[in-house]
Image 1 (cartoon, rainbow, N blue to C red):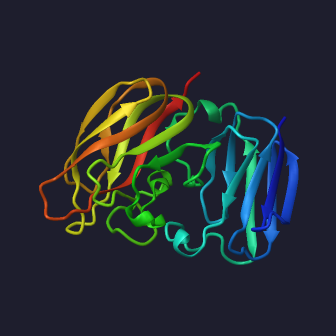
Image 2: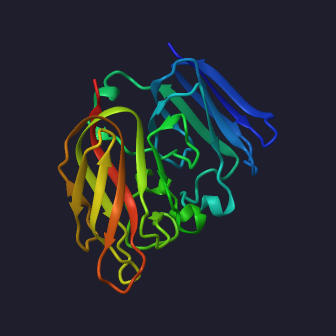
Length: 264
């Protein structure tokens, strides 16, 4: 059994709401979020798999927690641009956490998806990070590439958030799983707001085992699908992004999906 707790804290670490339970927990908090507020999830069993709903307007997140405390900072103003406008609003908030079931941990799934990933999301995986995010804006953050939203026909606002590379030729994005996984397929949704956008014709994916694959792509609104098998990898990195010979300087990644299972 896992002892769980959900705590809503303000910027001064003062408690605004709290709930505790075993294995499965729900908190309905009546109140309005303020800048600096955060939601803290606590468990006495780590590492472990958990299913968290951070907000009633967002999907559940299947995550691997490696820390007993994980804080989620409520986004405001510019930071809110890459989220559903209905999320974190109003005065009634629905938050849940439960320990994932054994059958869930064996399922074939998109191992990259984490709707509650944050820029400093250590201790809660999957996690995306990059060496560049266009102008440091939330609308072009690395986390957008694993939030499960695949709309790619525009470049702003939600649901068209993406990972933007700020025209940097050595741009790269790293996807950390936090544990070993067995991969069977890679899908890339490149942003396709043509003619505003460019696109990549080639990229390199490097895996934690040191192996690499060259990915050939084309101008498309559909996902680029690659049948790539790897066992026991803990991360992958997309780099050496070669854009097409097109006047636009703006290629971007809408979503990266990695299908497979947790390593047994």
